[in-house]
Image (cartoon, rainbow, N blue to C red; front, top):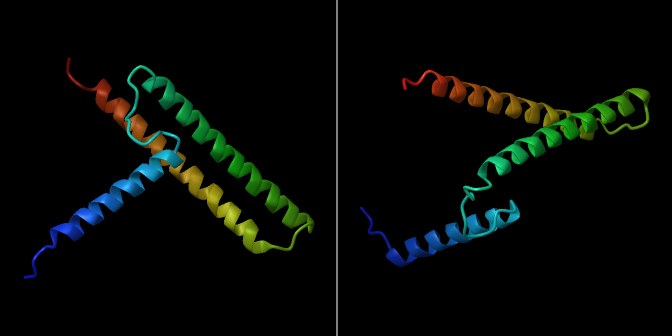
Length: 113
């Protein structure tokens, strides 16, 4: 067995934490905080609403590109298929999130009081 180099391990940990903070900032959550409990429900509702709007916009974009291809306005089938796959993936993700939320709701409702 080889020995674990502690300095290398600490460097990797630091790198992972830095990447996590960068992703948090990119997502608009700030670098060092969690979810604010006072605004948690409003943030969740607005996050779901924003996600649904993005999925709807992606589906509209894919539909518009498909119609443009069918009319002959564009000949770029690759971009049409990519946009359709993005829309499909977004829809499937939304469907799975909905299923998980319904399952959690049923579990909570079936809990004995």
